Image: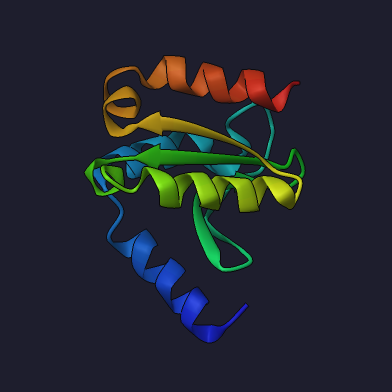
Length: 112
């Protein structure tokens, strides 16, 4: 992990959109079924929004910056999955408007 990767991850944490901040409040401190999540976690050259390393689960929150980047996101997902992780995605709107359902979906994935 390079210094620039760590610095980039830190800057993402400082400038997180409201949806990521809201979801982090639900996941931090083992609040989701006792599972520990990391925020802006680095997997090889990629920084993922949230990761539960013990369950090998990555949670991505997609906002407007992902529009038009479907090919990049698909390649990124393939790479992360090649490292043994499962990747699930939610939109900003889902996280902001249906937080309980999103957390329930994450919890269900943790218990597969």
